[in-house]
Every structure is written in structure tokens, then in C-alpha cells.
Image 1 (tube, rainbow, N blue to C red):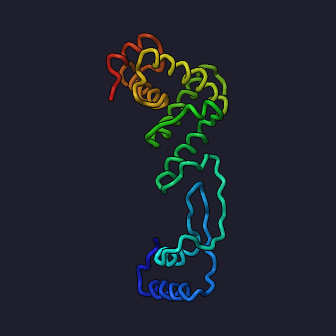
Image 2: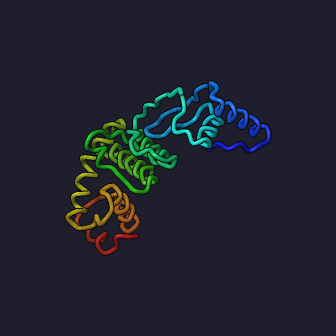
Image 3: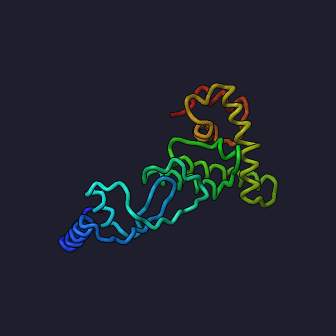
Length: 199
């Protein structure tokens, strides 16, 4: 909790601790709040002193940060990485509602991989149709024309296992291309995947 690392900061820390014990007015700290986390902008030593003295509260000026991604579940700094990778997915594949809720992975890096996979699918779709499609259209069509039917097919073939739908889709799409060098989904592809589902 922001313990002093140099003689100069130690002296400042000690002055703050003495002032705090005497009951002197200490300026409020300045923090950002994202979900359940607070990030100290100004007042690191005051937080450290309060923590060392066992204080459970500290006066603070709080700036609430509103994000496009639901901040629930942010408890540790590492959770921000997960949320950021999900945000990147949403920037590149702007899904919403039920479609968005259906895309979950346990390894956050899979969000980046899934983004690339959807963009590649969208590129092939535009090549096939000979016209430009915006990200929203590609995302909506990928979810309804590719993801949902493929997940249904994989579920019927009992290839989902203990993975999320998105994880199964991503892993098997990569395995499909590795085995067959194809982007199609049909019974032949499912048979190959059943025989060699990959890692």
C-alpha cells in the first residue's frame, strides 16, 4: 500500500502519520472508481498512512469512470485486462443483447483471437457479395449466419465439451482450417473434427 521507498518520501510519510494521529485535517485523496476498484490519482502516501494506522475509511474525491463494458466483476487489476480485451472485441465486433451475452471465454486472449476470426469471416463475406459491409452488419450476420448455426451443429455432434460455445467455435474453426484448409461447415467437416478435435 504505497510504502515509502526513499528517505525523502519516508520523511513525508512520517509527517503525514504524525498529523493523522494528532487529528489534524488531512486533504482528501483523489481516486478514480471503475466497478469495485479505486485507483489513487493523488494521495498515495495518505492511503499508505491510513492503511498503516488501521483506518477503514478515508475522505476522498471520487471520479466515477463509466465504461462501455459492465464494470461488475472488476475486483483485481488483472480483471481490467480481461475487460479491456472484451472491449477490443466489442470495438471490432459490435454485438449487443443476447448475441453479446453468448460470447464468453475463460482465457481473455481468446477475445482478441475471436475478433480476428470474425473480421476474417466478414472479409470473406464481403468478397463473396462484392460489397462493403460495416462492422455492425458483419457482427450481426456472423452471429446469426455463422456462430449460432455452427454452435448448434457442434452441439449436435457433441463437440462442445466443457468449453463455452465461443471457445468451442474458436478452437474448432482453427482446427478445421488446419486439417482441411477450408472455411465451410458441413457434415464432412464435422466428421473430421470428431476424429481429430485438436488440443
